[in-house]
Image 1 (cartoon, rainbow, N blue to C red):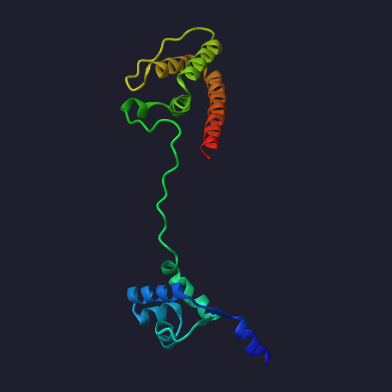
Image 2 (image 1 turned 45 degrees about the horizontal axis):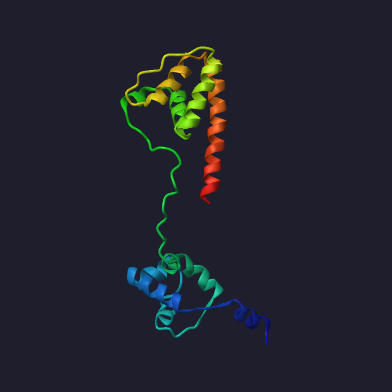
Length: 183
């Protein structure tokens, strides 16, 4: 057998019903002329495929027609559920919008913890500050959030940044722990 004929046999791809179904759907969505123009495959050859007179597709033809048929070959994408939420949802309130980024980060990280852990964090902030601070009086915040915000705002900027970094590391570890428990 000559070498060229041997290569052509190896380069042919056997087609199945999925191919024919996808070709039918594509031919319904586009005209045969458009399908030929887009893919670069001759109309006569496309008609032979549509009439199911051919059971194999040469590799070079497959490479031309596959990008056009791909949306019809793949099944519908199953709907994905959003990942489980860790922490509370976004709150909209004019007071929250006006806060500095550090304050927003503090509240987001603080919300991750349980009430017992929140009280522990407030105690740690009080010890770092060295004195008690008056809680803020934001209407959009609960009592614990107003307490932590009062302590946070009473700190020197450098101490505030250091405490926020520590809280960020702690909150990150907590979120990772919860994610590992989900899966």
